[in-house]
Length: 249
View 1: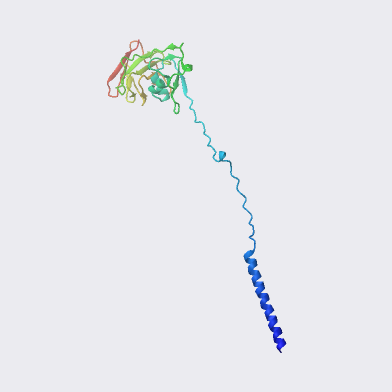
View 2: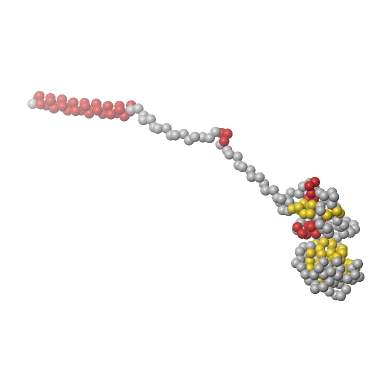
């Protein structure tokens, strides 16, 4: 019995010793295991500092192409300004003109359109030193800005010829709206002007025959010639007063 009991004690002691040993080894292994090396992340390539910022491309600004007009016989700065819907002052500044009455047939004028920057001097390529001078209408004294209209009948052309007969009216004063103005002859025939602004120095022609109205040419629509030598043309203002007269040569 004593040997059996001793044998059992030995077996139990061996089991306990083995368990303790295994526990100690497990703890040692857990606390002294080498750390696992984690794979390093792939670095993101960075561009050189010299190209980290790309300069924005600067688009060239659009350059407006100016309109060039060649002066014809009978043209005035006022009629040209009215044709292109710009002011007389704008045309004078764009071409370096000091006198609105110094125009020449064949002279080329820069018409300042939207977006066109007016030059400080007149380009030499737009001048015509050999051009024939245009005879301007009489201007008298200088006209102040905002002054009353000073309409005048400049001429009656080709009197008696319906195809080419016309009467030309110029404005020597401030801007005037022709709406309400009328033109009459000695027989009482009357032409009523449409709503049309006539600038200082501007001119408009009233043709006797048929045609399509423009800013510089109006048409009475008569079936025969109206003006004869010695006949008087009278320009009437909106209040019914005779503003100016002209006798056909």
